[in-house]
Image (cartoon, rainbow, N blue to C red; front, side):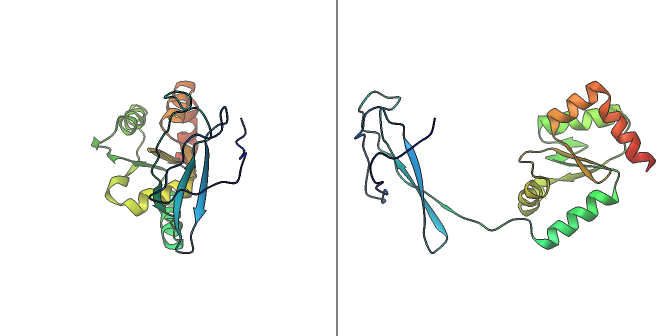
Length: 177
């Protein structure tokens, strides 16, 4: 359902509150960019809420900072060298001897089951690495598996590829190259 404004929007200031004024119209969200690069989330309640028709839902604006890319040219070069220097690289929470996440542990167990030698990188040790890697792979979650210098996938993709035999084929191709 498309959201559209019935009347001109009113931005919420830290002291202002917008209440329902038009019945049966969805709530809309507007962003106001300020010259300081800080953004304010302004919510306009345009209709009935889950708490009852015509209720006054008081919403406080949320402030957040617009940040530049976490993937600097230096970090991108480092990541490219790392994923291309090893046949199999797993960016994970924890390490292969002590995974700190169930999804990371699942991928580690799959790779160990296939007797695949792999390099593990603990993304919890460096927040910049963690954020930059999300941009590098265009994948928002961890673990992230790279085979033969290419992003293979996360936990769900690795599980499905393991079940179908595709993971073993990809690993064998990478090991033979």
